[in-house]
Length: 92
Image 1 (cartoon, helix red, strand yellow):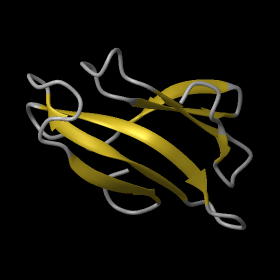
Image 2 (cartoon, helix red, strand yellow):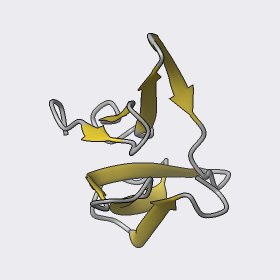
Image 3 (cartoon, one colour):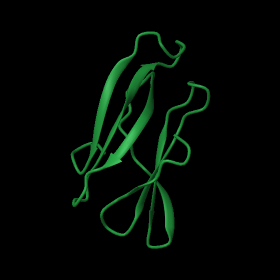
Image 4 (cartoon, rainbow, N blue to C red):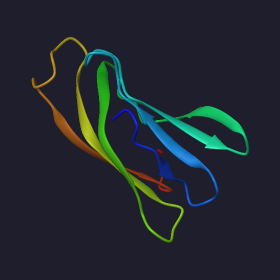
C-alpha cells in the first residue's frame, strides 16, 4: 500500500503503512493540522492485521479499510480471516 493516501473529510489525511514481510501488523497514520500521529487499529492478541486497501467515502468523514488477520506464527495465506474496518465506527 505504499503511496495510498486518502482524505479524512476534515482537511487531514489517512496514510496506511504495510507491515514488514507479513510478520508485523499494518499501521495507520493520520496527518492533521501539521501533525502526524499513529491512529489506533483494532488488535487481537497473537494475530497480525494486514490492510490491503483503504478508501474514503465521498462527501463524509468516513473511510473503509479491507484486509486480513492471521496468526503471527503462520505465514501469510495460512488461517486468514477477512476484515473490514470503518473509521467513524467503534474500534477505529
